[in-house]
Amino acid sequence: MWSVDIDGSDITSLCQSITWHPKLSRPASLSVRVPGHLVSVTNGVSEMHLTNGSLLFSGPVWMPEDQGDADATYTVITAYDHLIYLNKRMCKTPADYPDNNYPTEVPPTEPGPCNLAEPNKVIADFSTAPEILGAFIQATNDCPDGPWNLTVGSVSAGGPDMTGVPADWPMNIQQLADMLLDTGQLNILVNPGFGASSVDLTNGGVVNDLTGSVSLDYGTGNFNSQAATKSSNMEDVINALWYLLGPKRPWYTGDISHWAGSITPTAPNAGPDGDGGDPGPPWPPALVARWMGSRGIYGFMQEIQVHDSAEDEQTTARPLFEEMYANEAYLRAIPRLFTGITPERAYGSSPSFMPGDLISVSAGSQLGGGYSGSVLVYEYEVTVDADGVAEYTQLVASPDAQ
Image 1 (tube, one colour):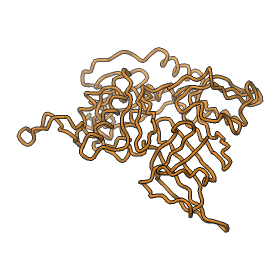
Image 2: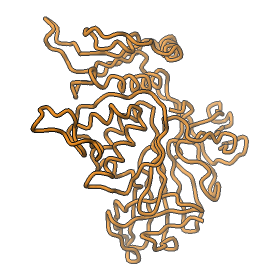
Image 3: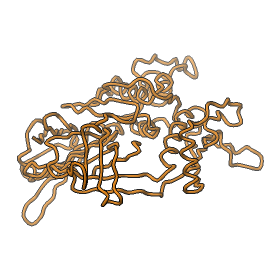
Image 4: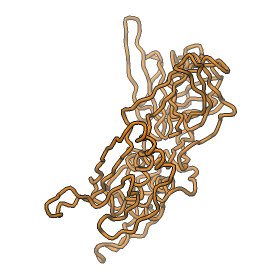
């Protein structure tokens, strides 16, 4: 049974509608519409919870909005889960880092504890995306302005080396998380709790493979979906992607269009270009085959991106940009195919899948020839009416699991 409370006070019977919107690696939201004179909240302090057999959502009230019409006044109360605080906290060195020797030693050999300006050493000590983000979240809890209501649960081992230092310090944790998410090597999974939540940090990809137990079918199979869509878009297709990495070097005689490094389909790992860097291994054959096949079908499509705002993208952060490049080049080589499917009203008494899970979907041939297969769920929305009947809408998923 769906139920909502604010600070422990049950308001389910007052809710004219409940809307829950979970997302993969992004803050989930919960909104309720209630009679304005019956519910009061303190914005940024009150906490809202959604349960249905278990706790599905917990987070601070972020945006109450009062509405009035000819008959009555209402309040729409929107809360976000505790992930919303990532952009309110800064990347810092851990509290147990040794004090630096400044001013007796200049420059200091260590950045010092809880340091905002030079958290470089964190990325040197914790090389993978889950480890790096976990270290920064933990540091924010251990430093003098902590603790806060987001803690680190599990951190997956392994994963590609992301050693590299974005030089735009200070930087909030959400900004760093966005960079790591862009590599495709990170998932942020929220475990809601009362008063605080924890995050599990994984190496990206599928969280749970539910293809054997969850199948949404439109016009075929289980006939358990009321609507479906299928879309394919050429807008973002690029099969000759280039990255130019800073710093820019204007001192080349007669030519100011040089950068310290580049990442291209033929130069994945060229080290510091022009500085004697040793080349590394070539791109995986499957990635090369993907963009070469794209050129054969769609023709040569090129895009050049310049990454030089920090002026050390090549010298310190190249491994991170290589992972970002590989992920983007793979995705953009062919048109993205997105499928949308809306289960029938009252589908399931409680959620049977979450963002990050792989589920089975199919549509009959009447929908553009139909489709069938597995999709990775990015987000969806559940709306519960005043009678407690739930409807799943806005389910966003993709067959390419990226």
